[in-house]
Every structure is written in C-alpha cells, then in structure tokens.
Image 1: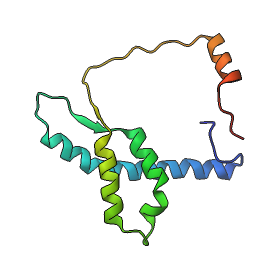
Image 2 (image 1 turned 90 degrees about the vertical axis):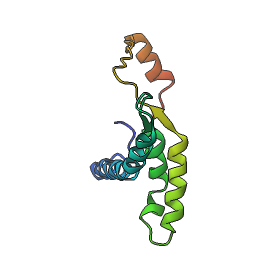
Image 3 (image 1 turned 30 degrees about the horizontal axis):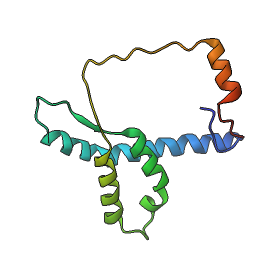
Length: 119
C-alpha cells in the first residue's frame, strides 16, 4: 500500500485503477490457459495454476504493447503464453500453512534497516 508512484491524491488514484485494470487483464489472459491446462491433467494429479506474480508482472511490463495497435498481438500472445506455461504452480487442496507471528522488535528492525522507502 505504501509503494505509489507519487504523493498526490491523483497519483494514488491512477495507481489504484491501473492495478485494477492490469489485474483484470491478467485474469482474462490467463483464464483460458488455465482451463486448457487443467482439462489435460489426470484427475489423480493436483490441478495447476499460472503463477499470478509472474503473469501480473509480465502483463504490467508489456501493458503498452498489449494495448497498442502497432505491435503484432499474436506474437505477443504466444510469448506471454510460453512464459505462463513455464511458471505453473500446483494447487493443493486442504493445505494449511502456518503463519509465524513477527515480533515488534523484528518489525522495527526491518522498518529501520531493510525496508525500501519510496518517495
């Protein structure tokens, strides 16, 4: 929430809505690929999903090319599809990973020494 491109209210609004737009575009682009992947998988094996961090970052970095009419969309779509297919994750049902509580001292140490401050 603290990593915005500017300090003004308008900059924060633009960052918010652009993130929503990129997220929606990512969902549209990866939805059919995930269905195709899981249709081919045997029922005894866990379903696969596209790594959302990789797909979101790739689409964010190529957003202008995706929305541009000057770039061949088929080539760009094939490039993204290959990237998505190389970064699959398994969906494990009923998996619960415990979260560890971070102490106040560790949090303060992180805030002082390691956190990247963007201004």
